[in-house]
Amino acid sequence: MTSLFFTLFFLLRPDYVWVAVRPAPLPNRPTLLPMKRSLQLLVLSALSLSGSAGLAAPASGPAFYGDAPDANHPWAIHDRNRPQPKRVEPGTYSTAAQPGKPPSDAIVLFDGTAASLAKWESDPKPGEAATPTKWIINDGALECVPKSGYIRTKEEFGDCQLHIEWAAPKDVKGDSQGRGNSGVFLMGRAEVQVLDNYDNPTYSDGFAASVYGINPPLANALRAPGEFQVYDIVFRRPVHKDGKLVDPGYITVFCNGVLVQDATPLEGPGGHLKRSIPVEFPAKGPLKLQDHGNPVRFRNIWYRPLPPRAVEGGTEGVLTAEATAAKRSRIATDIRADAATLQSTAQMLRLAESLVYAPDPATLKRVDSLATAYATEVGALAGGALEAKKEEAKSVRRAFAYLGKSKVISADYAPRVALDRIALANNWDEVKK
Ligand code: MG
Image (tube, rainbow, N blue to C red; front, side):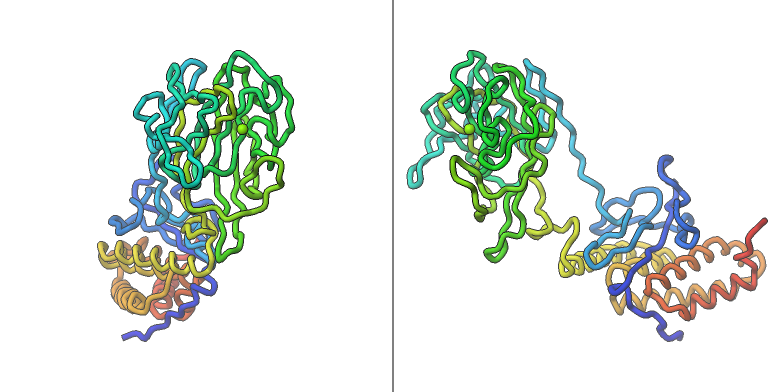
């Protein structure tokens, strides 16, 4: 029995990952990789790598071949183990006369129906109970009844993509903050201003699409009063950890398709007169619409919840060392489960791949056993039998070279040395001229 020559340094410096090319690649994917020859390491076209266990359905084309996972990135660059994005059917754009259709995974808050109006209630003073909203549906739009008070969603949510359309009264009255004023309050706190500023100056940090009291919009992209304006908002609430601010939160706003807030940091909830200071937000809150005394109308209100950021426990993006190690361990476990559905050489390679993510003595032992048997098997072949095995053996050899660079195996790992010897004896590395 060959002793173990594997050395496990992948958590210290897993600089390389191997390269695989699956059978029947998609026509628009490269089958040979735009990389240095030294990194074109493993071609598994003859080997089945089907099956999955917690991993996304494997895509055709190259397996992961970019930079390996590291201390803060659990995935390799171009990692084929990384799940595919979920499918969302896109909606349609609104026209002046007709609201568009939300994307398939949107949560609708108002669509012109009485059922959606029932998703809203009054915004009572602390200690008082909410009552059904007095705002009305007028020609399919949700219209503020002046002096009836703010309204809020019964549902509470935090980080989101919010779509909302509003129209100031066509009959222009008042000026500055008194003309077509309302507001979209994310989590009931931070206001994206709603105001008829089409031809109506006011203080800039209270302009339409300002983060009220914090930041003016980058542009005035409003349509004329009476027409519907479209706000698309990306809201990230401030995140505190152990009483300390770790992420200020951001608001991005498109007004009628024009970027007007570019990930504006929240210096607090914003507000009237006073400079905001950062305060802790809860995990979720209702969406509120303001009654500022003007019969502003709203339509086509929907949102899509956003996944947590890494800073609040999300598992995508740049992670802490601890979160990265935990995720790499999960990925390795999934790859090993997938490997269990495979046989012989394919299983050996898939198991070895898992070691790029996380060490595991039992896996290492199994890989060594399979690798040793493989080298022995190929070493016993000659003539046509060896020739028939040549391409696969070369692939395995390239995998070994790759694993060597990843420090998963050492330079003098016996099966690797054996395959190198066979290659040398048979001129496999000879460059054809
Ligand atoms: Mg307002």
